[in-house]
Structure formats: structure tokens, C-alpha cells
Length: 363
Image (cartoon, rainbow, N blue to C red; front, side):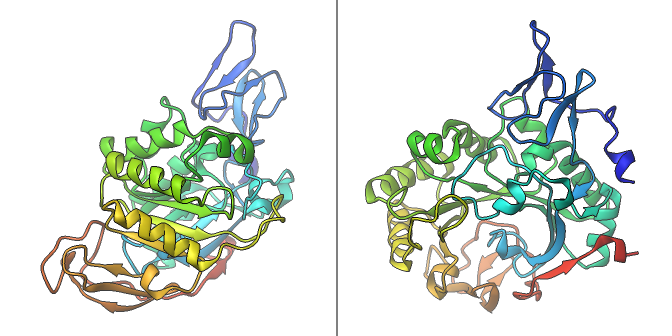
């Protein structure tokens, strides 16, 4: 199965041959230019035989059933389970990467599970998952595989979720998101200097992705910002980011501020204090944003959903465990306010459990 899925003539998209004979990848804003045998920055897209090959098609770094809130998505089928998986490689070079053993992998033995799109969709169905998430590393770099999995899932009524940095070109963005039902997009900071120095990337393409999702699609999406002490957590930057967010995305897109812990090549920074997350949340809410959350810390108030109109506790969260539920038909039971999101009449009951699975064991 692996050999069949990885055959070089499997059609790849978003590339062109340049006048000098090199291939230019047009999937992400790096526009890597490749001679025969060369890999792109992401490592998984390679020129072989005069065409672009995705070396990770049909191969995964592992599968796990998670709560949807772990992605994090707080307004998309709350309480349900999601079948999560990734591959290897990444098109960003974040020095603080918290999945670096997967996203920076250069060894194919990291890819333990082989699975066709149909196998993944069937597994999600048999495991009772309402959605499948492309996560751990960025699905943009394995877009063809992600799209095929998403299509197979839709045939079984299962949703597709992209957990991504949003680093994708104008050419590839529409086709990729046309196959997604939900997304969580990392807005890593609000300065080009941060993106250049710590991610080897640019801010503007991410902002374009966020605006595209908001104004050109029906994809439900939420935004996450990992706050790193002394790097992207100043009041001035948080005010600028919140003002841009309100002006361009509106008040109803959820925003998650999450805590950093030392990892990968950024071991010299301390953990993010909970007070920093609360300060960021307060600033964002002061600009009119309705749904602002704190993450990676124990904060019931910051993790729960509150009615923007009457202040009622709508969805109580203690880490990934749901408590009080005060929604009816997606509306506040107290005042009838329509809450933004994708809700069902009953919440899911998956809870906080995280269950690794091997697809070979599922029939």
C-alpha cells in the first residue's frame, strides 16, 4: 500500500517549470525552486523525474482520538471526538515548535502508519469520531493527501479540520479550503520581525489567509496565538493585533491565547505566566471581541464560553472536560442570543481522554 500511494506519477499540483529548467513550488509563499532530486524547505515535497512528488502521501506519524477542544476548537461540535493525525515536515521554521519531533522529522521511520484516505474515513466512522483533524505538522505541505482524506470523510458524513499556520499562496488557498469544514489558524505574532527571526516566514500571507477564511468561505475557523514572554506579549502588540482582528475578522471569530513552555531551540525563555494570558484576553475583549480564550493553563473562566449579551455561562470547560451547558438550538437559554459556531442540540460526551490508535487494528 505504501509503495502504491507514494508512486512518483501520482498527480501533484501547484508547481511550474521555470525558464531555467528548475521547478518552482507554488503551494506556499516560499516558492522553493528545485533541481532534480532536491527537496523543498518543508522536506516532503521533492523534484523527481521532472515533476513534484509528495513523499508523505499515505503515511502518518500516528493517529490519536482527541477531544475537538484540543485542536483547539471551542465552537465546532463541542464535546465530540476527532481522529487526529499528521505526517512529517513543515513549511515554517519556528524555533519554539512544540511538535518539533514530528514537524522537523527528516527520517521516514517517523511515519509509522500507512493509510489510504478511504481507510482513514472508515476508521473515523468506526471509532465514532465526528471529524478528522490534520494536525501535529501543517497540512498545507501535504495538501493533496489532506484533500483526498477530506473528500473520503465527507462521503461518510465526517467533517475535516485543518490545524495550520495559514502559510499558503493565493493560488492554492481556495482549493485547499474548499475541502475543509473547520480550521484553527496559528497567528504566531503580529510583527514581521517575529515571523522573520523566529519562524523564517512572513506575517502577511497569514493575515491574507485569515481574511480569506472570514470573507470568502463558509469554513468555521478559530485563531490561536502562543504567547512567548518578551517576544509577542507586549501590550502595544496585543492592542494592535486585537484592533486588526476586530476590523478584519469581526467580533465572532474565537481567539485562543495559549501558554508557551520551553522547547526545541527556545529553551532560554520561561513559561508564560497565567496573568499574561488573562491580560491578553482582557485586551482583546476590550476591543469588542466576543469569544476570547486562554489555553495550556487551568483557567475555568478563560476556558469557558460566556454569552456576549447577558453574560450567562454557556459552555463550562475545565481543561477539556465540559460542565454546564446552557445552549439550545445554538442560542443562549437565558436571553436567546445566537452564538457563533457549529453546534448540535446535544453536546458530545467524549471528555478529556486521548486515545492513540493503530489503523491496522481497525477493520
